[in-house]
Structure formats: structure tokens, C-alpha cells
Image (cartoon, rainbow, N blue to C red; front, side):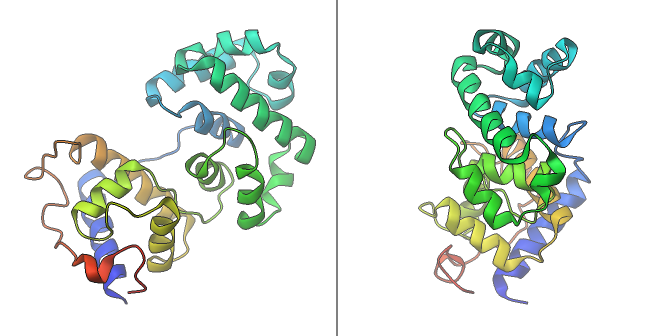
Length: 228
């Protein structure tokens, strides 16, 4: 096992010991998870839950029904998620792709490789790497590690990468260092989010953090561009 793998495994074990399983991503169906991944951009999850609850209550949490809605009606339903006009456009862009390419069928989408699906998703206006990878991992069960701002903040502070690491740098680092395991990727990302929210803030609470005993890794060895 490489040094990078050892550090990342130790970090996971420490976080899991503190938090236990996170049961993330919450959602009754894969499509609900997809919608949530788009709505959660630039807002907190409680606001997304309210928007999804409104879609469910109105009977429109279905790709075909949602796409048939007038944009203003959809915008009013997702208003609790914030930036509702922008997110309406992004949702409709995604729905158009999902319906035209897969007739709104999750099972048809799941037949394709994560590489092909990721390329397709990134071609949809308003879908960036984090949203695309969240859809792949949490909705479709594809082995793709999701990176977010918390990931860079936490692991740059521990010397696993530097602050200039890109999304792709970090994703490669994690996926090269960990077993290809959907459950592991799911749990690890959820634990990172919890740690970032609770402890590794802009003003960190290092003395209380579950990673306080994780040895710092020399950046020259554990930089994101390293093959260690």
C-alpha cells in the first residue's frame, strides 16, 4: 500500500469512528437524487429538501411531468432552493438531455459506462464536475469519487495535496489511492462533508477535529500531481 493510500485510509477510519455511516445521499429514487444534485448548488441541503418536498406534493417529481411544466411554474416550485431562475434553466437543460437521450429511464442510463456518462453530463449547460459526479455516484451507483471544496480544504491542511490542486487532480489522487468501491466512495465523501461543516471551516477547530491525530503528509510526497 502506498503512503498516500495509508494516509487516506487512516483519515477514513478516523472519520468513520467519529461519525459512523452517514446514509447519504438522501432520496427516495435515483431521479430525486439527480434533481437534488442540481438544486444543491450554492445552497444548503435543508433548502433543497423544501424544494423537493414541494415538487413531490405537487406531483411533479417525474422527468416528463417536470419538463412539461412552464418554466415559471417550475421556478416557483423550486424557489426554496435559491437562485431558482438559474436552477430552473439548469434543471430543464438536464431534463431535456435525460429525456432525449434515455427517455427519462434510469435503467437505460445505468447501462452506460461512467466515463461516457460523465462526458455527456458535462456537456449539459449548468452541470459541472461535482454535480455530474454526484449524479454518477449517488443516483447511478457508478464508482466515481466526488470532490468538493471541503475535500481540498481538509487535505491541503494535512499536506495530502496543495491548495492549487484542481478538481481532476484530487479526484485522480483519491481514485488511484483507494479501492474502486461505490460504498466506500459514497461514505468517504459524506464524512468529508460532515467534517468540513463541523470542524474544518475557514477558521478551523483543529483541537476537536477527528483528524487531529492524522499525521501531516509532506507536500513533496503527497501533492496531487504525485504518483506516490
